Length: 512
Image 1: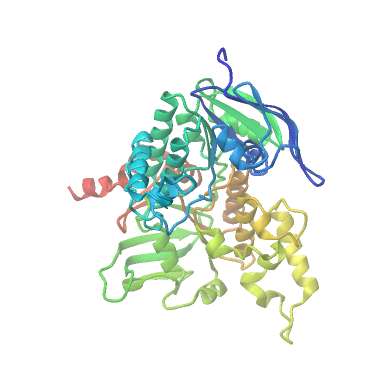
Image 2: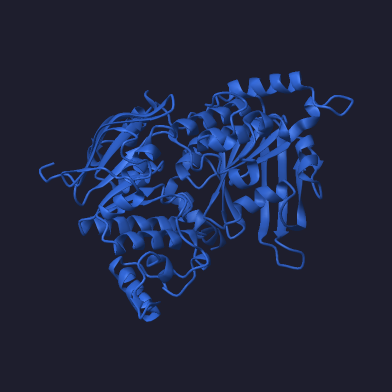
């Protein structure tokens, strides 16, 4: 580019003990550019932005970082901040109990007569929010805000400090579709104002919607920089995983067998005495089949799966049959024993004990399978089962004793899936199984789904990603405000029609 780069790295190398995290990374960010960083988990993205943000200090790495032509030697995050670089991590650095204004001016509140000038604090906060083009009440506490609004507070902090470089690390991972659109529009406005942005996301549709260039990292190295307007998702994916991906959704058709799960005329309320939220839900899933369920956030997808698994809601009427047997009032453990398993959308909260090992998890859901008649665990048998699952799932870790909290998102998801698979399910309920994991790990999850259906199992796949639903499902239902439209055949429906169904348009059309 003809203009002097705002930020560059040259031949960056970073080690953690014997592990090489970065190997000769070259990167360049122009003024007013949105430059995406793409790569699988473990590719080096987090390490790179921690170097740029001063978290890994100068002296602990090889190579050079320059900001507007001057060599940068950041010893602390404050040094990076002073140089105009603001890193907004997934884990937001806000104090929930404080107001928006207090968070914006925490380190430099106006002082008058030795005391904080609160009028000036709120006046300055309003100026910062206006400058950042963010509509938030400065007197609201952060804990009262949604995730998307909290993200905006972090961005406003950076704009208030006159940052020239915004680094956004997976900024939309927990946002609704509407919040994502608002954030991307904001990034484009900042770009027009001359602010540079490094945008990190697994969601390639967002990357292409907002970025000028894309740099791919793989195994700690910068592989290629591409002009976003002159490349395609398949090209980016190929460089990320190091091989051609002919079919991102490798669904292998299998012959459907007998119905393994039947849901008939189901009405379910959140609590006793309330009106049903889930209404008139009616479908079946057969052996060897993937049934996709879509819908916008809050449509009832998670509630439906959790009700079938015995952990949500009060049934007003209707029935759920698992392999011909009525399911009602049974505990998750009883349902696991009968052949139903659920993989929750929130793996860290409902699927994992982050301080425990991989091996501990893999047999956790069915300890009876490794328990002797005297009530003690058969260590040799348990280890053999864990080792087999560890290898078949291709979990990337040193060994079974690796703590789950140290794994990448994709490998954590494999552990959750392995825990469910060990129960030997006939029906597997998957709630957003690829959320927050990279492309390579997604494909491995899809292959696992194929393996399950090839073995004659039934899979219900809940996903917010319409291409994923279309690519992996045999039939699709869409929920809107607790009611279902469908079934839709993937070969006969478009993303636009599914989105219309998610917004309630399909049911309006049917009603008319």
